[in-house]
Image (cartoon, rainbow, N blue to C red):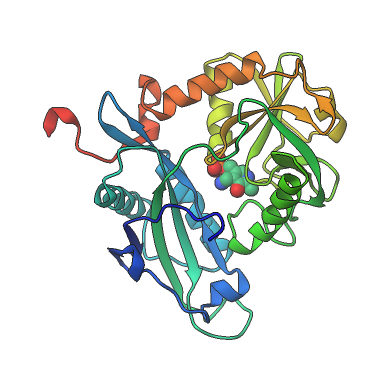
Length: 316
Ligand code: PMP
C-alpha cells in the first residue's frame, strides 16, 4: 500500500494503553466525516551516551493542543501534566531507543450525521512512531510559491492544529511535490508570506532575521519560538516579527523552515532563483547545529525544555 509507515505496538485509546490493532474508530465517526478534530506533533530524541529519550517541550505542545481543542469545542478530561505523563508511559511501553514522532489527536467521536460542534462526544488518542527526516533535501530545499492561499483566521484558524484545515496543507504539499519541488511557501489572503505546508519560516537579510507574526495566519510553532530564543540569546541576532512580502524572499540572504517534522531546513532555491549563495548559509547552519544539540540534551541551560522518558542511569 502507498506510503505506509511502520506501525506502533501500542496506542493510548479511550482512556488506556491498548495494542495498536485495537485502536479503531467507526466509519461514522464525526471527525472522519467532518474534519472535527485537533492534533499535535511532538518529537522525542534519543541520546545514545545517556541512553535516554528526551521529549522536546511536551508541556508547550500539550498547552497548544488543549487550546486547539477549545477552539473546536473539544474538552479533554486531562491536564497538560496528565498528558505529559501519559506520553512518557506510552513511549516506555514502546521501548523506543531512537528518535520518534508522537501524534496526539482529540476528536469528535459520536457516530452521527450532522455538521456541528456542540452536543457531540469527544475522545482522545495518541500514538508514536520512529521518525527521521521529514523533507528529503533539508540541507538545501527547492521550493515554489503555492497557488493556494493559507486558511484565513476567519475561515479556519491556522493557529489551531485543526484536522480539517490540513486539507489546505495537503493541497499545498502535493501540488508542490508533483511539480518537482520539495515544499511550497504559502501566502495569506493579503498576499504576505505565512509559512510552508507544515513549517514556519525565517528569512535572513543583512544580518537581521525576520519571521511572520502569529497574527499572519500561521501556526504558533513551538520550534518557531525555540529558534527565536536561540537566535536572540545564543547567536546574539536581532529577530523581528513582521509581515514579509513575496519579493523579500527573492532577495533574502538565507531562508530556513522550522517545525517539529522539518526540524531546521535550509531553503536554497525558490522556483528558478537561488537564495543567497545557493547553499545553506551561516546563520541557518549555526542555529540548526545548536537546535540539534538542544533537543538531544547537550546544552545544559536548555535541559528544562526536555522531559526524560526513562529513569536516569544513576538511579536505575
Ligand atoms: N505550521 C504548520 C502548518 C504546521 O503543521 C507545523 C507543524 N506542527 C508548524 C508550522 C511547525 O509547528 P511546530 O514547531 O509546533 O511543530
